[in-house]
Amino acid sequence: MNKLLLTILFSVLFAFSFGQSITTNGVSLTETGGAPSSCLTNGFKTLWPAVDLAPFGNCIELTTVGNNFESSAVWACDPINLGQNFKVTFTANFGSTTPAGDGIAFVLQTEGVPQVKGGQGGGIGYSYGNGAACMSGSCPISPSLAIEFDTYDHSSDPLTPPINDAACDHLSMQKNGLMDAFNTALSPSCLIASGSVIDGLDHDICISWNRTLLQLEVYFDGASVGVLNDNIAAPFSYFFNPGSVYWGFTSAKGPAPQLQNVCNVEMQTNIVSPSCAIALPAGSLLLIAEQNYEITDPSVHLEWTVHGNSAIESFELQKSSDGMRFQTFATILTDENETNYAYNFTDVSPEVGVNYYRIRSLGSRNNSFYSNITSVQLQDAIDDFVIFPNPVQDVLTISFNSIGKKEIGITIYSLIGEVVFQELLIGNNGPNQFKVLTSDFPMGMYILQVGNGMTDQNIKFVKE
Image (cartoon, rainbow, N blue to C red; front, side, top):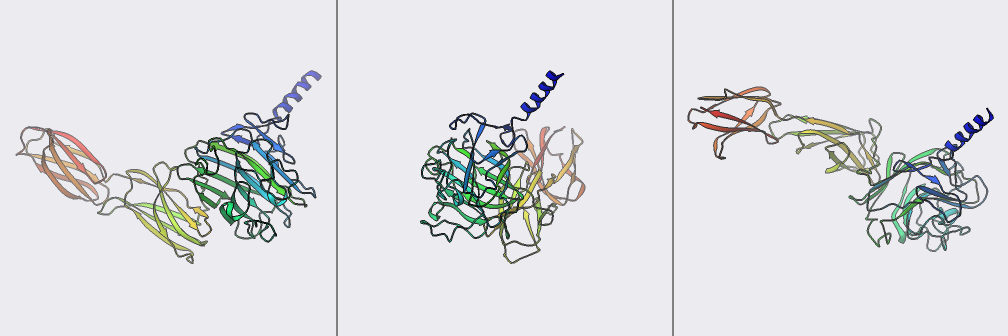
C-alpha cells in the first residue's frame, strides 16, 4: 500500500513538473535548469529574479515585492525566423504600486541566450537604467528591437541622451537597447486613454508581425495601440541575420515593491494570418451589409455607425472571400469631431458567393479598431435556366428566374464560334420567358449563352 501511495505521489509530482507558462506552436516549453549557460531545444530560461510559477499557475513572475532595484529576463531557447509571420499573445500584470514602475518589454534580439539582461529600474531590463547586475556588456541588449510597455515617466530625468518617454503609461519600440529618440522605431503612444495600467489586473496583449504587409502591430486589451510599418526582416536593417532571432521578455523596477508578471504566453510562427484584430463590442462600430438589386451591375451596400467617435481619422473598408484574409478596397476620411455618425459605401465589385466585410478605423495616435465581420451571399442574377423544345424547329423558348431587375445578354453560337443571334434584354424580378425564332437557322448543333455581367451559363441545343 505504501508503495502504491508513493507511486501515485510521484506520478502527480511528475505531471506537475512541466509548466505551460510558454508555448510555441502548441508545444509547451520546459524551463531549462542546470548550468547558467544552458538553454535547450523546446526550453526557456529565466534570469533572476524571474521565476516560473508552474505548476501552480501559467505565469512567470518577473519582479518582486522587495524594496530594491531589480531587472529580470526570460528567453525562449529556440530562435524564430522573421521571414515568416508570427503572433505572440500573453497577459501582463504591471503590479499595483502606482507611484512606482517600471514596466515590461517584449524583446527580439540576436545577442544570444540565455545570459542576456539589461539595466534595472528605468532600463526595463533591456537598456541602461541602474546598471547593476547587467549581463549584456554595458547593459543595452544589442542588436535588438524592444516593444516596451513603460509605466514610469523618465522624460524629465537629466540623462544624456534624454529618454524618449511620455507622461502616460505607454508603448514604444526601441532599437539596440537604447531609449533615445534617435533609436526609436515607433514613438511613444498611450496604452489607455486615462489612468494607469498599474492596477493589479491582467491585461491582454497581442503582438503580430505580417511579413507580407511589413507591419509589426501591438494590441493592448483589444485595441491597436501601435503599428510599425517597416521591414524588420530586412538583412542588416535591425538584425544581421533576421532568419534566426531570439525572443523573450525583460522587466525591471526601482527601489519599491512592484510584482510584475507575464502569463499564458503563446507564440505562433509561420501562420497564414497573424492578425490580432478582434471585433469591438456591438454598437461601438457596427457594420451592416446587404446586396443591392438595381438595374446596374450587382453591388453590396455597406452601412456602419460609430458611437462615440474617438478621434477617428479614416476608415479602411476591407473585404475577404474566406473571412480570414482581408484586403482594403476603399478608404474614407472622416471629420474627427463627428460622433454617433452613420456612414455608407457601395462595393460595386463583389464576387458571386460569400463576401465578408469589416471596417478598420484609424485614429490620430496610430491606433485602430475593427468592426464586427458581416457577410453577404451574393446570388447570381439568373437561375432555373432551361430551354425547350430541344431539338427545336421554329421557336426556341428560354426560361429563367431573375433575382431583381437585371440586364441579361443572350448569345447563340454555331459550333465554329460564329454568332448567329445576340440580344440584350431586361430580366424582371421573378420568372421570365424569352422566345428566339430559329426557323432560318441551318440544321445542326448550337450553343446558347446567357450572361449577366458576372457569370455566363451555356447550354447546347439542336436545330432540326
